[in-house]
Image (cartoon, rainbow, N blue to C red; front, side, top):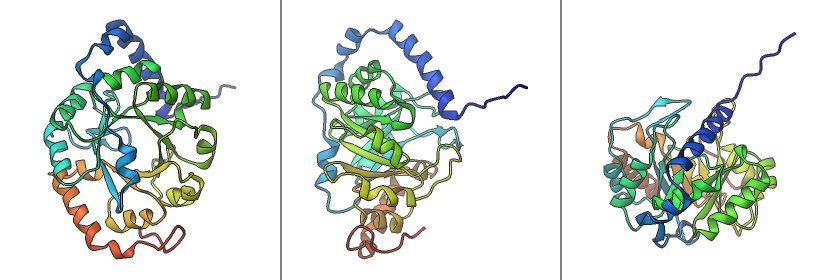
Length: 285
């Protein structure tokens, strides 16, 4: 009897990422990356910006497509969208660099970086190799993403330590308490709770709420995926989440920057619904 095991999308992405890294190393060495213009720049701290925040802060993402949603926006220019994001009050920018599954590229990141010199930028990709940290530094990233679901605890330790050596901050993405317990270490600056189930792709904001008290106060908390309305964001802010990574709901509009500006306005108008402390109030869905 033959049993067919279907690979998850994450397995497929990581397999492809390993192929990309092999090819990238053949095309450009570590020393080549160290010679890139942005490699020597001083990085900008997202952690500082979020820790001092007295209101919810939005990390706005430039995202062309996703495996679950397909094409989201394949015509907007990254430099235009990200400038609009900054003008609308984004605390940081996130730019996808994965090509095959998210339509991103280093060209997108570099266009955004050159247009926005004074704001923290996150390289959004599937980091599995130290080489990618050097790539991130070379294109002007300030923060790198480590996804617990595709790394071992030992890999998180080694990659986060190396990121700090390169003056890059580390955003650890987790989906459940088990991932958090296994991977949270001394070199993690920010924990991002992803509200999207990697198997079903459904989003549930209770994921962030359930994990809010499990993340130490010494680590900045952000919430990711499925965030659209001000009430939800304000409720999550009441549970200690300082930042909110939003991409798809902005990018699917005609003008992503205007979408952020409208959200910021709604956040200001509805700020009175913030619970008085963690565990207070009901989450508006």
